[in-house]
Length: 317
View (cartoon, rainbow, N blue to C red):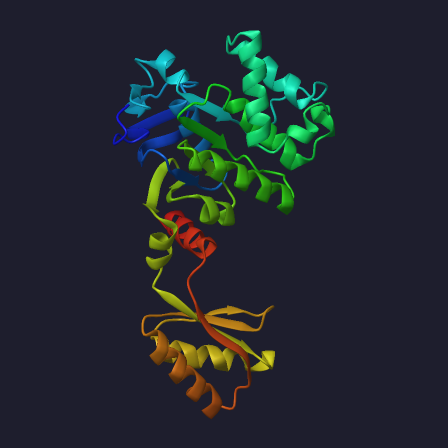
């Protein structure tokens, strides 16, 4: 694979299971040395896409190349170039961390000495050296997932697939996994990440493809996706919840579009294009209307809002 060639390229991938169309012709390009996030709800097609790209499932249509090799015609070559960490831990809970990695090394046909050396390298990379002899069943959730990542990197593959790697982990463990992923990418590994967590995609991914109903419905960098959602947003938190509707009326008039209300937070939000002008006008008109404000400010849309906007729109198609 050329250093300038994308690590993953998919064109028109299709897959059907009975009456269910899991993939309806997705296109995907992942530049080498980057993190690409596949974002979507359950059943969107994320895992099916990963199974095709890792040669575990044959597509019904379309083509895909990973690390320069066709996933159907050159499946054996593809498998030598990739690592896969699934949603569930694959390590043996009775064995220690080092024993697990040596076992995986031997399964990959490394000699005993090389398998031990590679295990020690990975334990250091993933900050597991101090727990090398401890049974994996005694590891925290984050440590166990880092051990999973290490096992997926035994042969130092140029492309690593992570299928919802932090599902079920507590916040501290998720951060540990994120740090491990950043370490891998810093070393030149390309990562394709599927996730349901919007903050995870925002924090890790260089580019994102949003998948719903087996189709890519949007793509770009996190900032590009946020910018596409009607620009910035003006948020107002009122002191008295009884004035929420009146505040919404003011912001609707200023922005020229309906405001969103969050009664529980006593907050009104509306997209704006003229940041400073909208903020200045809102402060003046809210004061003139006698509406007391606890907080007011401008912010970028969150990836959560982008995702909900995109998938809600798809549901209406």
